Amino acid sequence: MITEADNDSWTRLRSSYGTTGIALFLGAGVSCASRLPSWDELVRRLFELKLGAETGGFNILRSAGFSLPTMTEFIKAKTSADVNFLEAVREMLYKDFPCKAVRITNEAEGARQVVAHVESDNATLAAIYNLAVVRNPTGKLVPNPRVLSIVNFNLDSLLEAYDTARNLLNPIRGRRCLHTIENPAATRIFNRTSIYHPHGFLRFDRRAGRQEKEATTSVLSENEYYDFYNRPTALFTYTVLSLLREFCCLFVGMSMTDDNIRRLLFYSKQERDESRRLSGRRAESQPRHYAILQRCNSVAQDFLTTTLLRLSVQPLWVEEFGEIPDRLGQLTKDSLGK
Image (cartoon, rainbow, N blue to C red; front, side, top):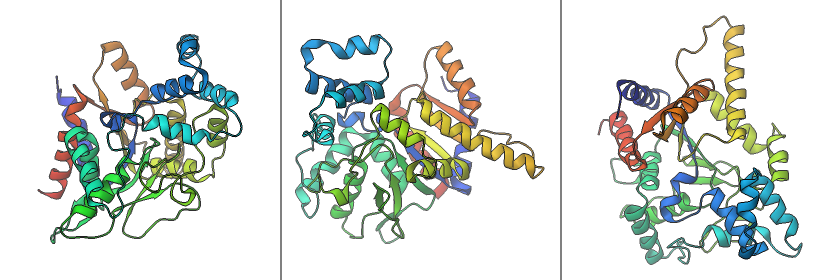
């Protein structure tokens, strides 16, 4: 049941979107309708691929309380040094993806397959794209200036592939509207919205495997996590902190239970609070960020609400994830006056 408090929260988000713009943070829930695995399922697949399904080892280790990064570290340690681990991740990531065999660039048929799949099966991804990319008066697809940046914690390239496909099929051709920052050597492109992939970026199209077009490392295993989050000046850690500190951020498809994300939220809030204190300003009266979450039992909901508010994140509760496309669509319509 939608409460008055829920509506107030959405109203505040629409206000932030319309006045200062927002940054989008995307998680596995955005890709699941395209038959891509959750992180839990991805590690399970890797475990079975590398160590054998008959061992039942994944369930044993998970029930014993071992984390997914620790289990991934174990899988890597057991993988032969001459095996490309990222290629195994790509194989398991796109194993059930309906469009994994298409070649998008300059191939209209491949583009049609991707667009048809997203628009028929993954309404959430389509809605996110339609929020980040709008049509100008001539019908050309252009970046939405109110979506300042996108941080995608998924490894997949679905959003970028959909952008390529939509522009290829658009009667009024322009250039792609989104640009992936896949590694520290990549640079922003004027008049494109940057997508940062902190955990890695693996393509499925004809550029798959080209080092200059995707990430050459990932952040999946325990040691990779330790290194990644212990380098505050590294590209992705610094960028995520900057976005959290400077902008209103909307989390979509994320459970908000990851300790590393919550730690960055804590640090960014701590910095803002200290800055306001030193300048004599009052503490922020409302949460700065928003997270779309599915309504759950009262204990879990109270737990998430209480702990997220302490990190300046306002939960936006929905009864079903199927509500998200309409909610994002309304966000765009309200602010652009459509």
